[in-house]
Image (cartoon, helix red, strand yellow):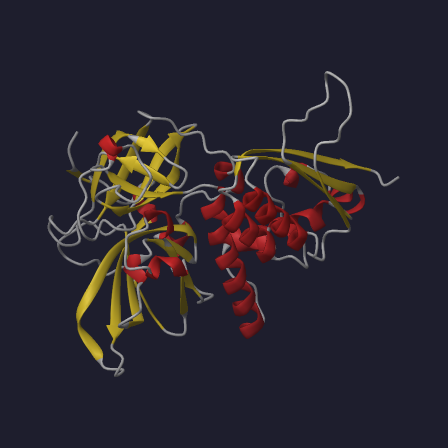
Length: 385
């Protein structure tokens, strides 16, 4: 296993990767003398994912960006996008500002607000909710990485193949050789012959990942799971709404159109787009979730979950809700192993989609997602009684 320079950076998935140059100003509004470089990758025509620490703005402020697609030469490509404030917005997890390294929170996005973008921005990783609801990743599963390491010639794209070392709740550990400027590199696996991004490289060691002691010297990245997907989609939703309100048009982000134009109820999450439009609008949607807490005897964990569910009940799309515990009924086929039941009714499937992407729901997943060992979801759709 060794790093190799990418032969052709214009084919998938290397064409989805970009070199980001960040031009900053200090607190005195004067340009700083150095230029930050980092790796990033597209998940939509106007959304780039990268490492959160690459986007830090505590001491300096990013005022201008140059984005080089499939850059792979010592000579800078003439094909690049230069963009200045206010035509882009940076979003990242605030808790990464902690001085210690919390790999699980080290990610962010660059949201491009321009409505006319180069054609090459249409090349991006597929980004779908169903990929990350229950990601099936295992130790020794083949993975790859590619980025712009600082120990190789500037502007050259280098890649490496290997296998997953370990997967924790929020991190994916890998065996790759990485350096500065690799931060933000995509880690992907192949599913059905297509590249699926599963991690965001952020660190050369896994000390803060909750990994097995013997695995901590390995490199690691943010695991893209349901929590991370939800946070990123929430950022996209907020920026899409702000851009739409500002200029009176829709964003070019495919993911944003599909998941977040709530009042229009355009495309569905998951497989719901396969349903006929009349069923999506007319049939009653019932959503029932059973939570199995990691520590069912922990009163504090249960109280936190209940508090979160009570907030969900106030989301306007929810027409009726019920929070319950296992009933003391008899029967061999009655499931009593769960901790809390969450039942809610929606006018139709479109309203349920709005609920799934509501900021309150996404915050619930972020704040309470570590409480349960598993959750079982039953969704049903049918005529109103």
